[in-house]
Image (tube, rainbow, N blue to C red):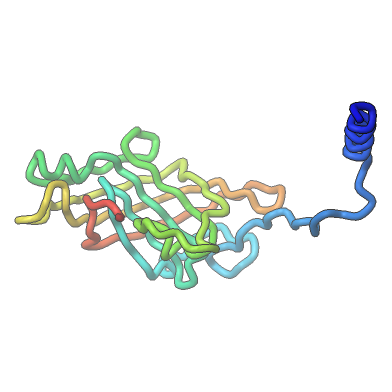
Length: 191
């Protein structure tokens, strides 16, 4: 009986090493580069007017997307809402070469429902994220009177941003002259 068990084990081991004659699953296509926010192939200037949905949360996280939620710009300035409560307000300008602020250009699906949301639905995802390497961000955060710390509202202005975006095999520089965020609720967490 032991010999039959060993023989069966040997047959299974040999068959596991043999290549499959038919595929076990359909091949998947590699992800493609997301289209330019401006509808022109190879476009290098980002059209700020394409961003129509805005939101915020955290301490401080701001986002904006285009109408169909496939392209976003996000801003993260950690600790700004807390600082606003401690100092009676926050009004600072920083270049992206400095530490406190990160700005990203994001391509994906359902981005207009993804950010500041603790319920992630199928199909909501970031496919590609490119951090800006040049630019300036001005952030103004005002604490909400009578609210809980660090509940606040934020305004931001992004100017002269530059992103290195890979399109196919080529790297392009995409620029955004100016984009504003106004009166967005921050200092809260989804959940």
